[in-house]
Amino acid sequence: MLDVRQIRNDFPILDTGIIYLDSAASSLTPEPVLETMLEFYRQYRGNVGRGIHRLSVKASEEYERVHGKVADLIGAKSRAEIVMVRNTTEGINLVACGLKWKKGDKVVTSIIEHHSNFIVWLRVRDRRGVHVEVVRPKAPVEDGILDPADFAKVIDDSTKLVALTHVSNVLGVVTPVREIAEIAHEHGAYVLIDAAQSVPHMKVDVQRVGCDFLAFSGHKMCAPTGSGALYIREELIDEVEPLCIGGGTIGDVEFDSYKLDESPRRFEAGTPDIGGTIGLGAAIEYLQRIGMENIERHEKDLVSQMYEALSELPKVEVYGPEPERRVGILPFNVSDLNPHDVALALDVSADIMVRSGHHCALPLSKSILGKPGSVRASVYIYNTREEINKFVSTVKEIAETLAK
Ligand SMILES: Cc1ncc(COP(=O)(O)O)c(C=O)c1O
Image 1 (tube, rainbow, N blue to C red):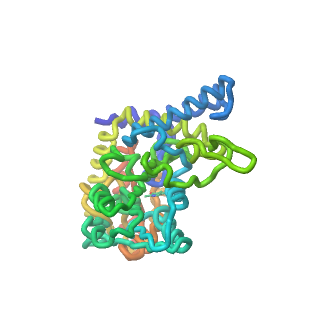
Image 2: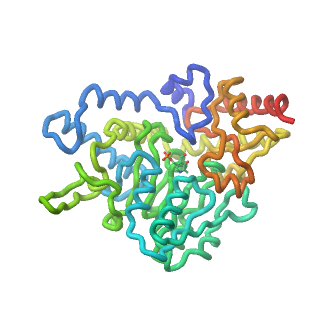
Image 3: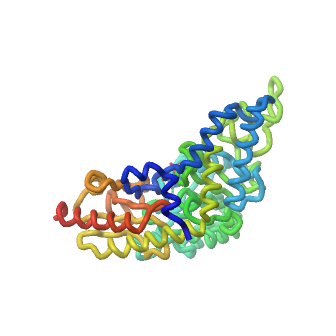
């Protein structure tokens, strides 16, 4: 069980009375994470991997230790497989720019992707002559459930990469990534998982998923903005060219040549976000103390409550599958109201923060939901059943007073 009351003490911003239902966009940051970052800035501020003095040595140790914490969190075999990046978007771009593409290669992705795992592949198509195949969900398409059988139809021996979201940031639906990864590997294709909405909310194990690359962002899981990680399976490290090279990435340099260092250093050019990465390490420890299974169960409970209550409201249209198939994300619209107006009304009238708009997934919004946008409520470790009650009653009031 998860002790929400105790957890809420670590988030003083909640004392202001806000109801924060926008963690899928970015989570709040708990005090222990802020304290760990402050400790770095106050007590051992130094650059990493360069200095011999004690501040630099301590900073390097703490920074490098986070690679191990990430490896432990996602079941990677070694620290060499973990590259620190600014966010999921950078991790995915690193793979897209770094793989050795040839004309005629195929990328298979889906229409429920976030733009960060979609337009990236369209650019590879335009630059490298790669073919991009986009799989749609099975009927009813509005649920967003991807069927491995549909992937089996388009993945072939020319497929170099299957790039998929683990959890849709709009519908909250969980993708059967393991089954699709198996199909991809039968054809020698690599598998990249956009784990921005899964790693913060459930136990994710790269061995179980069977992926070759996996990217996630720290800011959605209690860590500071500017922190995140990319997993690259050990055997593929030499298949990926670093996005940037320079200081911190070299094994040796001559006047007319250079040799890159081992992974992860070769991928982490320049001075990294040391404080942010140390904060990510603290956030991982914080979440692991609570327990990823407990977090998943807690969110499932809240999203079920929200799903049942909102589905009963006249004038409210809820999108996506039954709660069993989703994490704590729930998109909806209120009759003819513009989603931004609904979000603003929730904030102004009841201090409730939600996201509104297309959620950086325009192909999904336009061709699956048939709407330019929606309101999205998303929950995390600090949300309570009372908050969901208040949220539902405010949506009801908005529907009764503002909608036609
Ligand atoms: C599924 C998914 N992928 C990618 C991203 C991009 O994450 P970031 O902005 O941290 O790079 C997000 C952010 O909302 C997301 O939800």
